[in-house]
Amino acid sequence: MSDVAKISFGDKEIECPVVVGSEGEQGIVISKLRAETNLITVDNGFANTASSSSAITFLNGEKGILRYRGIAIEELTQQSSFIEVAYLLVYGELPTKTQLDKWESDIKQHTLIKEKMVKFFDAFPQDAHPMGVLSSASSALSTFYQELLDPKDEEAVDLAIIKMIAKLPTIAACAYKTSIDQPRVYPRNDLSYCANFFNMMFSVPSETLEIPDVVVEALNLLLILHADHEQNCSTSTVRLIGSTQANLFASISGGISALWGPLHGGANQAVMDMLTSIQADGGDVSKFVLKAKDKSSGVRLMGFGHRVYKNFDPRATILKGVCDKLLAQLGITNPLLNIARELEAAALSDEYFVKRKLYPNVDFYSGIIYSALNIPVNMFTVMFALGRLPGWISHWKELNETPTTRIGRPRQIYTGHNSRPYVPIDQRG
Image (cartoon, rainbow, N blue to C red; front, top):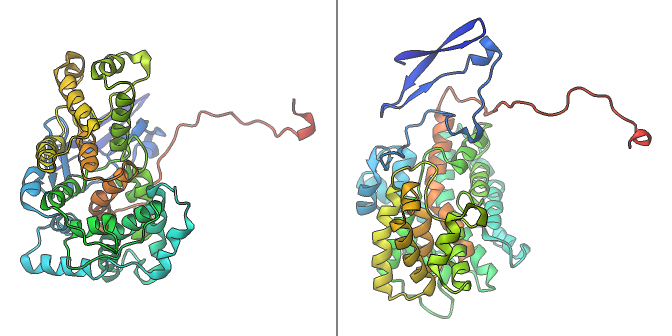
């Protein structure tokens, strides 16, 4: 703490400590505000409220900076695997060769899910959204591993983390296979994390699937870019649930549900829906751009702009290069992807969007890449969840290792009726 902020109200003035983060950001500690003034703060969407301190991810939206544990996202995407980044996020340091080999081996040994759990998938409607299945099955893991539920048991937590990272891709692939009425494919421990997922998603028992290296590389990069993003809605949800000392599996299930919303993880699906609507309307991008600029039209330009990034999204910058490379190597000529390129060019050159800093974000490019990889649209948010999993785990773990953690309990300003009597039913108008 370096300074204080003074808050005056009526004849009262209180001094609130100012805390300074390692990157120089400052925050006013108002924990005693209500006790001393009977006031609370109102901050819709918590846009200016820090619910915690964290040493995991640094994000500077004005400068377009994203770092995991101090390491720039640009370096990690060029040099790391997703599994290595997961270790970095969870344990705070890059692993040694020995640590990484053991980490990868441990994860591979836990990729199978219980056979009783496999039967769950048959109980869901075939058209069930994979995110609903993913959330339900993640929570159900807590019933199969009841010895791993204590957040204060370090050994149990470490094993729960490994199981969660190992099993979520298997659950996701099972949900997809069930939805298309194909046999579920068991994991293969001879494959890398990303290649194994693709094999479970797209292989069939009667054939051997060849997975191009460029496909595995693209998925690895996508997962790294989504691995954490500071105190976003789903991460905050995981932390809030975790503050009750709920187990890891239940907390992750809550994060998956929060991610499902179209304003959060569902945004990349919304991008593809937008491109499909443009195609259905004749493929006229200029017509759509005019509608997007007309506030009365109800049309929104999806995949552009960001709540935090006010300059550019560093993840989008990385993905654009990968997107172009992937489409070229795979020879993709999907008309939706052509519309996406035309829309991107139109928005980047239109003063209306440039003035409002509506640059393409990670959701715009990730949707295009998932489509190029033949990932169905209803699985886009599932892919986001697979990537965000290490971040959720890291925040849950950090929260439970912080001695000053308190159960989350936001305040409110009540705007309902004042005290009034109960009216018997025969006297109601």
